[in-house]
Image 1 (spheres, rainbow over the protein chains, first blue to last red):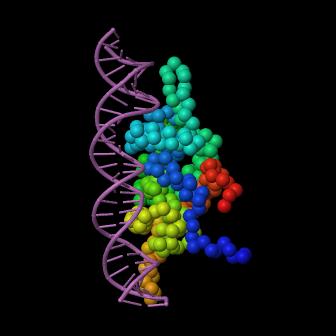
Image 2 (image 1 turned 120 degrees about the vertical axis):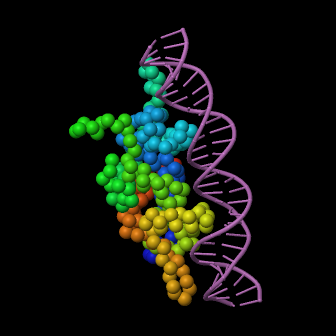
Image 3 (image 1 turned 45 degrees about the horizontal axis):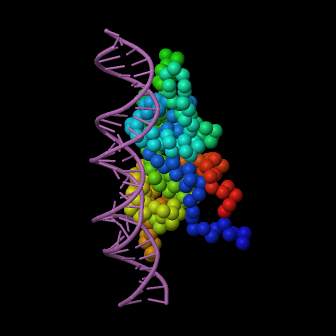
Length: 116
Length: 116
DNA sequence: GGCGTCGCTCTGTTTTTCCTAGCGACCTCT
DNA sequence: AGAGGTCGCTAGGAAAAACAGAGCGACGCC
């Protein structure tokens, strides 16, 4: 029974599957990446990710908020505003995202690596 | 130019964006995760990721192969077969995926963390 | 011969993502 | 004040992606 570990033909990590439950959606990874650089407003987010539409960003933000990764805060200053920021859970994803960015930087270089 | 770094309001890492170019697609992350555990055939992959359909898996595999992350090998033994495996580039993503799985395991456990 | 598997493609339907336009409230410029 | 811009967000319909399911040619099993 010691080699019981080999019975499974091959199974996908449930955790990984769970993670890609939202990372597998078109923009989620990117908004988390932007947010990992600090809190941002709706429009800042929109510009930062570039190419996302209002409706989709709104959806993703709600989703991420529901998942407990980002927190929506209403700033009641004179000019009312809304700020999105990572929660503790979301922040703990930052290093992973960072590592992923590093990997992409040196392994998917079909794009000019020195251009700006 | 030293403080030029602050001019950008907030921009998404190009590398991160590039990475999510395919990680942001529904199953890509998962098939890479399975493949990171070793080579697999079409049907093994299908079972491992669970829930994906043939057509989509076929698409993703082609995509990943084109991106240079996985390699398709035709085994010309008596029973012809096709095997998919990670390339060097794909393998280098494994630790990231691993870390992501670890993060998911302890941060998105709305699911029983000690059940099996 | 009948049946199942393998890798993969094709058709038609559902889900996701996208574009465009609009809302109320605020700010700025004139 | 008036005109016009930004802010956060929603609504409606179109395009694209993902889906289920059947099918193909070649193979092995009994």
